[in-house]
Amino acid sequence: MSYKLVENPIMANRENISISFTPEQAAFLAGCVKSGRYQSTSEVVREAVRMLEHQIERREAELARVRAMIQEGADQLDRGEVVDGETFFREWDEELEEFAGPKGE
Image (cartoon, rainbow, N blue to C red; front, side, top):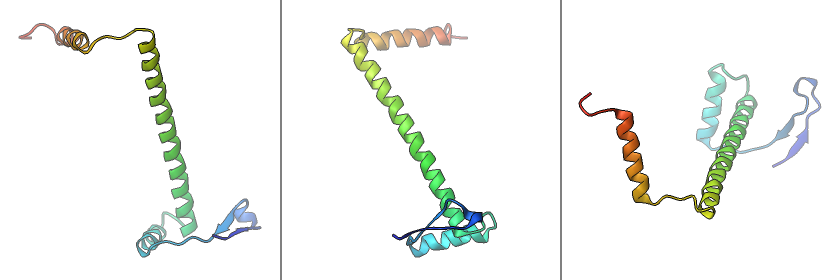
């Protein structure tokens, strides 16, 4: 990969990077430009990079959320705040029955 700082007022703060694509990827990029939605292949690639950045951010946020839930469960276990499976499912069934109302309604 080669990097070159571009001194163009229209494209300020941009770098030229040489990358390779498979023929299928190149055809896809060309199709995106040909559709009129994008003015250049670079514009397509920049959008793809932005989408990847957002996807990674969402994954990291979800991972942090899951880790926090696991830690919360581990902390509850350490404090002895646990219910055995049989009790849990019995109470769950009772709640579902209350939610559903009397049978026959």
